[in-house]
Length: 589
Image 1 (tube, one colour):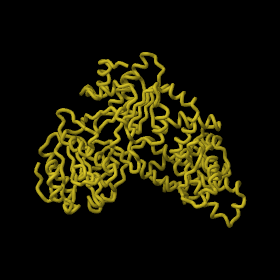
Image 2 (image 1 turned 45 degrees about the vertical axis):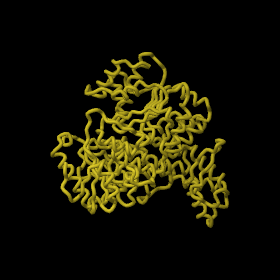
Image 3 (image 1 turned 180 degrees about the horizontal axis):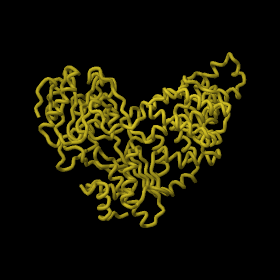
Image 4 (image 1 turned 120 degrees about the horizontal axis):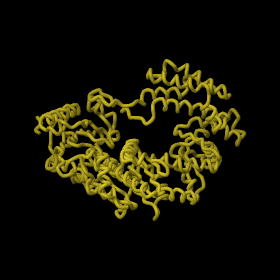
């Protein structure tokens, strides 16, 4: 497909607000329509370039009346929103049939899991829950039918224990595609009861009670039949996997199996060096499959040159004319002096650098562990960050209550599809809505707890199910949701400026203070990368965490090192590359 200059003018006017142009690497990516892995460094404009690519592609497909489908996998609503807004502004219209945009779970549930259950079990009533403790009663009943002697009172503890082991164990497919069960509890009698446990587990799953990760198990089972693979391959010619480094390995394997073909264009876009979940493997990329977007507009060469020491393969380059401040090593003796010195650095730079002062980005302190917050600010506990939710609080509360009622009735003998339909059309659902509104207005369930309990019990009693009381875990879950699921305040408290590195992944900040206490993993990475330590006695995750922390900034990065670790050898190397500031000394800007 040939991209015309008028196409660029259109997407640049929409996505860049006529304030700039896509750089040469971004244009190469936009015009690239072959199977590749695209490594896009921090601040390289990956999401914006992807949105431009989708606009131009769909505009071309519409003009040629092509039936080729486009499939985009994202991890956040931000990318979905940016792409759909750009499509609407371009006159293409939001993504709709035969195309698809959504998360990997949404894709596999819609195109594999639901079709599988319809095809195999003639229903599509699925409930996803990673903490499905309601299955315990089901397993007790199941094994009670299969092993009559286990129902005797003297075997009650064993029956309960076996039910819990079934609930905690995980189904998987053997190499011959037969079902098996992981012995997650290291039980010495596991082999004796394995077959029974598999049957019990699977019998509940086919009723529609799944965990989130079982999306991939049942998709794999569905795709064992080649005819279903071919349907998806023919429908979706173009596949774009955004943030591929954060994709579940099982999901990635399924996508590779589906779309690595000569007839599909399958592009993975992301940054493997930003894989920062512990125990998650870093994706491997073959050089021949690789395309890099490594020109950043976030920071200047002052930051880029250090990132390239920490992560040489990233080879980050800054845009011409982009400037940052020289990064700082902050030497401290007392942890309590670190934060005031950081604030002093910010004030001094604001007084001398107008670009720094006029930036609307935030300044944040980054930690590996939340407990370090009180080391940075005496007596201050780490404040849980309130994330924006794609669902309203009403939706979350309602979903939790509805799922609870359905599971309880089904576990005690109801039919899943029939129960869901009955509850959906029940005359008392309006009463539930009114209670939820009261909860949201009050910000608590305390005042309506008994009223809510009575309403839930009315539903349960109508279907002959056992009632609950206030001590049920449901009410604790509801209380936690009313506290935690809130829309974040745009005017975030400036004093709440301590975050984990994981919490700021994807953000752009004006400045960062990075502290590293206790085992000092990040300091070890730093000293090894600068050739001071010979041994690389750290995991790749810590290397990636340092890379992510440093690459958040537009202007200033500060790394705190304890005075007792500041040896003459370290000083001789780092003072050639970094500005050195001591907490008690005057700051020279």
